[in-house]
Each structure stands twice: as structure tokens, then as C-alpha cells.
Image 1 (spheres, rainbow, N blue to C red):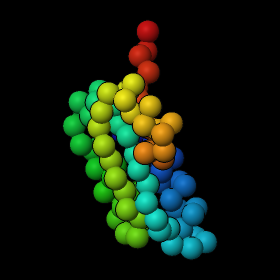
Image 2: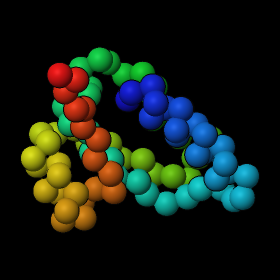
Image 3: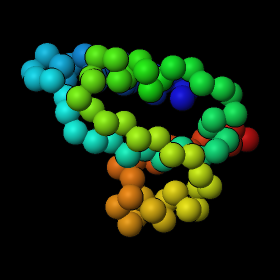
Length: 84
């Protein structure tokens, strides 16, 4: 994931955990190109302090993922925008 996403996850996770432990399910879709850089431990970094959150990550094509987001299969879909 981009570094800004990691920073945001860290900041929000810290703020939320002050009030009560997080729990539930988060379904995340990633467009395949985001995964080409290799794993960076983002999922582990989020899951370690939030063991009660079931984090599901699926990789796919942007058109399919965004259609499935509209259908309610995902809570969030991330894609990379070309930097032209």
C-alpha cells in the first residue's frame, strides 16, 4: 500500500483504539497493479493491534472490483491512479 495509506491507518487505528477495541469485518479489494511492489506488511501492521478485526483482501481487475463494490461485496477498493 502507498506510504500515505500506512500513515493514515496508523493514525486512525491509534485514535480509535483509545475509545474501545475494534472488531468486525473489513473486506478490501486491491487492483492487481498495487500488488506488484511486493508485500510491505500493511495488513499485519493493522491486524496486530486489532486482532478482533477480520481483514479480507482480494486482488482483481479494477472494473470487476468496482462493480462488486457497488454490489456490496467490498467495503473499500483501492486502485492506483497513473501519474501522467
